[in-house]
Every structure is written in structure tokens, then in C-alpha cells.
Length: 295
Image (cartoon, rainbow, N blue to C red; front, top):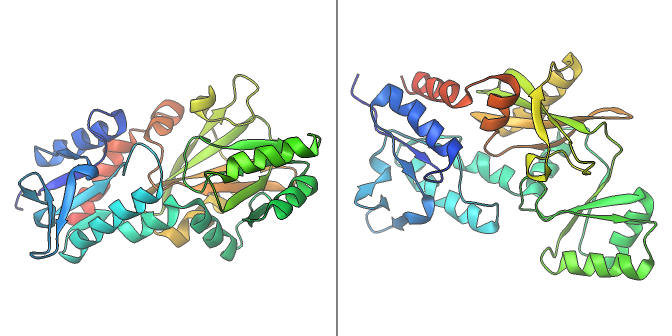
């Protein structure tokens, strides 16, 4: 078999991107980490350039990170990869599939259409509707449509003074015209990342709050731990990830008073959580899966 030419779309120097590139290089001898902000498209010759290399001539590209943070710009960057796909380059995961997960609203609508239980959620551009949602929920989490690790999220309580509520909503809406509002549930201080590779369940890790934060993210001081997921959680996570056809992803699941619920399906998956929480070398597993798919 001819030596495959594979790259990782990611952030040079960042652990998960480098780990994936090193894992691929174990099979191919070399695998660059490609920062997509350095990639440019020339439609005259249907070429996608990174330096002097045309990514349309690669055999495959594994997408680990599309930028330092989620934003509408990430959607534009993913569109570039569709040119490589049209040229026959295998993209892990396909660009359109990732596109549906970068935008929190797109992910939520798909989950809802497939009857996946989620926290009560309101989507609106109206101040009055937002105030009504806070009153109905008691406490509400306002979430940016493009964010990870709870960045930019704001909790607003019905017990707050009305003027305070309006001020908080206005400040949030200044950067988020379409407001994504979810009921703040009383959880156990733990949620789980359910890991899937090629649609097959590999295991789960827990994120555990350490400082009474309302969320469990590592960004907010949480820690990873092993988690033996109940079968009901596994079945739910499987149904949640299935519509997106991702090569690698994690599904965020938590226990509510009404049973397990899904918060989101990840566009890129959690390598560090898998490694520290469940002892899984997700980079090595993903690289081996990609090589098998390319045979």
C-alpha cells in the first residue's frame, strides 16, 4: 500500500492536536498539524493551499480543532474543507456533520427532532419572552450559540430584581441576539462524557464539580473521573449521536429528576477527558480507526 498522506486540522502546539498527529504518524511516518487559519482557497484551480501544499492532494484530514474558540468564523473554515472533500479527500468527521454541531442551536434542533430528552429550553430574540422563561424556569442558563466549556454562559434567577434581570439579559443579548435559554437543573455536581468512535460506544468519563460551581467543566475547576455508565445512559447517548454520523464524538449526559438528559453532542470530542477519566488513548484509537477506514 502506498504511504498515505494525512494531516490533522488543529492547533499547532496544543496537546490534543499534537497527540492525534503523533498517533497518525505512528502509521504513516509523518503527519503535520495544520492551522486552518493559514489555509486559503483558490477556486481557479480548485486548490486548497497550506503553504506550498495543496490539501486536495492529501489522502485524508482529521479535524481536531477548527480554532481556539467556537464562532461563526468556524463555519466558514469548515466550508473550505468541503472543497477537499469534493476532490476525494476523506475528512474525519465530514465537514457538514461538524457544521451541524458547532452551532448549539443546530445541534439542539436535531436532538429535539429525534426526541432526545434535554433540559427545558427557550430560543428567542425577545426580552419579554426571555423574562417569561426565567420566571417559568426559576433559574435559567443563557448560553451563547457558539461556545465550549461553559464560556460566556450566564445564570439569571427569577428571584433577582426585575431591573437586574433586564440588565443581565440586555448585556447577554448585546453579543448574542438569538438567545438560547435553558432551565438550570439541580444536578448531582456530576455529568458524563460518553465516548463514541465510528458510532460505537467506547466508554464514559465523569466531570465532577470541585468548587460549588453550577457547571462541571474543567475550565470552571472540575475534575475528570472514571464512570461506569448505566445502560440507560449508554442507550440514550447512542441515540443522541446517531443522527450526526460523527467519526469521533462525545455526548454530554447528566441525571435529572426525570431521568438522564443530554446537553449536547460534541463537534470534536474530549481527548483529555477520555485519557484522564477512563484511561483511553483516544488519539491512538482514532488514528487506528482512520487507517482502517482508508484501507
